[in-house]
Structures are given as structure tokens and as C-alpha cells.
Image (cartoon, rainbow, N blue to C red; front, side, top):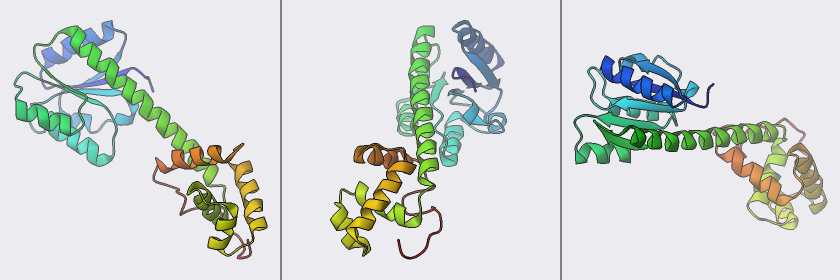
Length: 217
């Protein structure tokens, strides 16, 4: 996926052509669509930003954005319109739009907004990558190790963890050593960092997954 791939959705062919020319001249890869319905057949994760006209037949830019949000998409959206209004702008921004630009807008104004959107998109991808890596590491833990990790992340001492889980402090230390090894952690702060990164992604989490193990652990 190109880090600079921009989606453009506008039912006006002239407007699409103009945006494509501007964005490509600035070095961005552009994929454009004549309708929101057409765009929804696209894998939006393959782009870094969506520029959408707010008023389109069949499905408006606002409805498109709301559909993407329901899908769980984090694709940054910039709305453009020739018929802006305060209520519409407020609704768009409350829905998470990066910007709301009224036509005609200055080219540099759009490019500034786009650079902001691409920065957000890059950070989201980095967070997603960190979460995936953390979850891959945590998936190697046994159910008991997950329990110990959860207790440690909560700030409890080995003695308190032992009491909470009804195991010996020595067993807690053994689990802790195994957890550090599996998570490639040098210290407790590394464990916490990995656990927090994993929590940004739904599955697996500290209360699920893991390998089977015998009861005495």
C-alpha cells in the first residue's frame, strides 16, 4: 500500500479531474470514484485519506463517512462542498472529519489538510502494527501466565499476585520470568508497554486466548 494513496469521491467529473491533477502534481497517488456507492466496493484500508464531496446523489459524503465509521474504519476524511453550512460543518467535525472545505478553496489549504490527514493515518498504522505485534507475543502465553501478567500490569507485587491467584510467590516469579522471555521484555515497564499496545486491538486480550496448561501452575 502506498503511504500517499488518496481516495477522491465526487460525482462531478470536472471536480474529480481537477483534484486528481492537483494531488498528482503534489506527488500523491490518486484513486477516484464517481459515487460513494462505488467507493464502498473498495478496500479503504489500501489508502491513507479520503476526500469526499459532501453532497452527492444516492449516498452523501456524510452517509459514506458514517458507513465507514460503522465498519470500524479509521481512514481520515476531508469533506469538500459548494454548499456549506454551520450545522453541516459541525456535524462533519463531530463525526471525526479532519477538515471541511468550502468550494472554491485554495489549493494550498487542501494540501495542508491532506498532510495533516496523512500524518494521522501514519500514526494509526503504526499503532495498529504495534498492537498486532504485541498480540502475537501475548498469544504465546498460557492462561495462567496471562493472569499473572494482568496482575503485574495492575501494579501488584509478586506476593499480592500469589495471594490473589492462590499460588506461591516462587511460582509467580517463575511465571514472570517466562512472561518476560516470551514478550522479549527486559523489565516490568516493557511488560506494561506490550500489554497496553495489545489492548489497542480487540483480540486476543489479557483475559482471553493463550495455550492450554495443567491446573498446577
